[in-house]
Length: 519
Image (cartoon, rainbow, N blue to C red; front, top):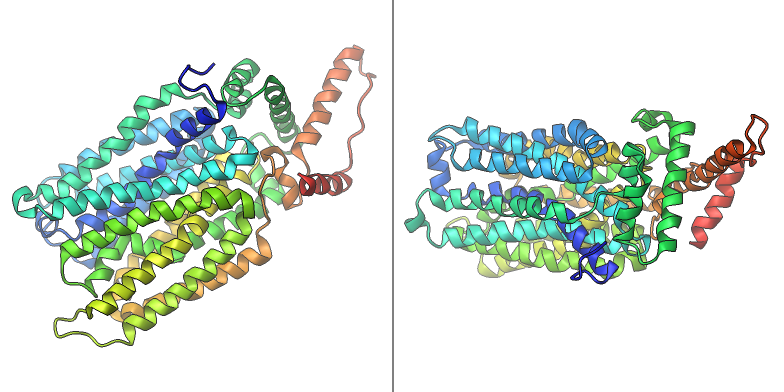
């Protein structure tokens, strides 16, 4: 039952999704915070002027923690303790790690590194639970729009971090060492807000049924987010049917990840596009834009302002996905985004490498403005496509029995790719300069081709019917048949009760594909 404030169920859907999506602010802020503080001379002095290898290790510490949290902790916590508990535990770890980084002893980079690792674990756990929560409570017809909040809030995190950093760079003389400590400490804001608001949102009905077998709690949760009792009962039957089928015909645990061919196939696809997301060039821009811009501009304050404006436009560009994601679909966005990013990267590399340097090593003002414009145009293509859409597609394609673990593994593949590539990117950039951007252009073209041939469209497909797109059976229909069998068997009172015939997998797949196309 909603409060009087939330008279519209649709408004309440957006409210609860906003709280869950705020977990992505943690990721956006932290992906930007080290990018910001490494430009501070006070940070460098506090940690004894670390070299490029140590700088790479600080980023690696975070990604290793995130990989551990996402691969090994996020799924089990979300499945056994609940999606809300996963978000809460992730926030608590972020808060602890923030204090460790802020108050790391003088010249003790080890404490800062440990904090980065713990904050990665916390985010790996929270980033597994958040998108699953949104996907499981959002109505199918607006699921894409609501999931757009997820990537939008990544940009919000970057926005907060870069503007805080810009303000600190303008008052470095007054703040001293707090010019970087303030940037790190401000990360406390969002996890505290999430922890305060979590008690006001329901658990997910799928989790209530799967883990507690509590239909009443599931029904109560659905009544808070669905418009009619008919919708509630219909969705309850779909969930129960799908879970029944997954439990009896496939596996109720994570072994389905390798037992079920269609799940193996979609996991492989999800791993590829999530790794690809970080190889588009956006991961490197987030982590090292300060170093990149130092090759063009000489003023640290000017670079901080460019980063802040980049994050601001990132929010606006991501919001484009709200009106196009459910209208045009996921696939076309990924293809257009990949091609657009490739073109931007080719031009960026050409403009920087084919223009002369000034005496101080920087570029002329017109070249600098051109490069900033092109990199802003890059995020115009990236944010609604490979930024938002990858998360949306990943969170909706897996069946309930493996969803939490599969989403955790797939999403943390981003950090696997980041860990490998970002460790040597500073060296790559130092030796090859902007020629490195040709590499990103090639990767983006390959990703667009991959999506064209291998990624199916998931627009408007109910979660319980998603398996049909990947050569599997319709879990909803098969489960309803199983439930009907059980009821009729019990009603007959003996082993010879009437049973409904089950369609053969091949026949049902043909029928169900038609149903999905007509959805």
